[in-house]
Image 1: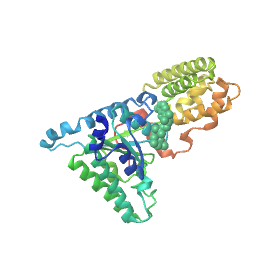
Image 2: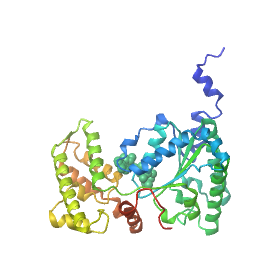
Image 3: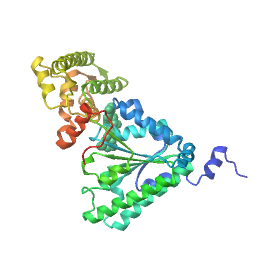
Length: 363
Ligand SMILES: Nc1ncnc2c1ncn2[C@@H]1O[C@H](COP(=O)(O)OP(=O)(O)OP(=O)(O)O)[C@@H](O)[C@H]1O
Ligand SMILES: [Mg+2]
């Protein structure tokens, strides 16, 4: 006689067990079930507009099967697609995984490069296979997410496909399979991420209903990110010098006051990414050279690397001091100094002039 628990019986009835899914999709990327995910939404500081839209999206995805029939009658089936774009290390993948955990939906992070093969036929087969498989899993599980990391690999000259005609055909097969999945109404969310939005084929860009831009964090957000990582260090045996927080607060207040004065003088809001006006004013008023100033153009990921470098440096002393943190952050350097100017400008302009997460970049 079989001695299985109810849970095991339920699992047997499923066509796709967790292990099955990991095995089947594993050749395209990594599959995460909610229990595999450690990230939480609060770990990504800022990005409030992005979080709000993701919240709506995930709520809709959760209820998708219920609302689908009603929407079908009105011929209004929402397209479950989001494109996340912006510099590397700004939290696109982490936030997606965190939302997937929060809403208890499994996610497969597809490495788009793995879909591309020197043989066009194989590329098309892989693209179709991964989407159809995920759609099938989604209908059995109630919801599933396919996250195409570096989606520009499928649809741009950066891809491993060298013939322009072949890129077009790979893009077309990608678009066709997405259109079909949407039309048939599977509870499958397709999320794409790219650092190269300007290279992305415009037909792919248009297929995504939501476009969310992720930007370099401004000094207010960087302060909270630094504090978040300091809190993490405090949870270990390593001590944290109190002067870090005091100096951080002091620098913050000075920059904020200078910003307020400048805005009054100019009569409009200003961003620290609008040319060098902001930092020139800071220099002029006060010789500020603190953590917030040196991390201008840093992403959350750069700050994390800076903290990690500092931890290596203090192995012997076991106390994180302001000086060590300063030197370490300076040492790692910011992503803005590596990415193309066009990307920084478009990203920072959106931060200062436009409401975040709205409107496509020029392509
Ligand atoms: N706004 C933020 N607040 C706190 N931590 C952040 C923030 N942005 C990034 N990080 C840190 O950087 C790490 C890396 O971010 P993540 O991999 O999600 O970036 P990404 O945008 O997906 O980058 P890529 O485009 O290279 O794939 C996160 O796990 C987090 O620790
Ligand atoms: Mg990523």
